Image (cartoon, rainbow, N blue to C red):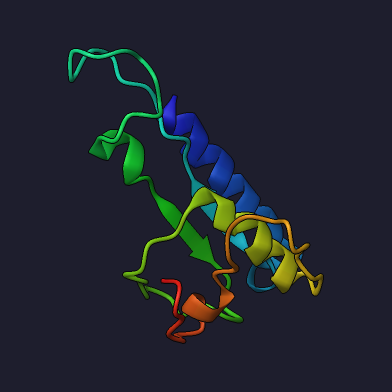
Length: 114
């Protein structure tokens, strides 16, 4: 199954590259928090504070902003993705929105909330 995902991602990259849009496209890879299948003798809930549900991958590619191979050490949350996309798209995030744009962190800035 994972090989199919890899093939699909390769097709997306190839299509974007063929249309000269690869470097103009923000690509985000992340995951949900998954399920436990008895590893801790607990339920299959996602909301338990174990590494499997807390530390999930968040990879971003956009050469206009993100230097290849760079890493950000500050914590980021799934709720930070929407404000990030809004800022990149030139829209203002509503005051009620949860999370913070990751653009300052991706730009190398230090922010007080990180």
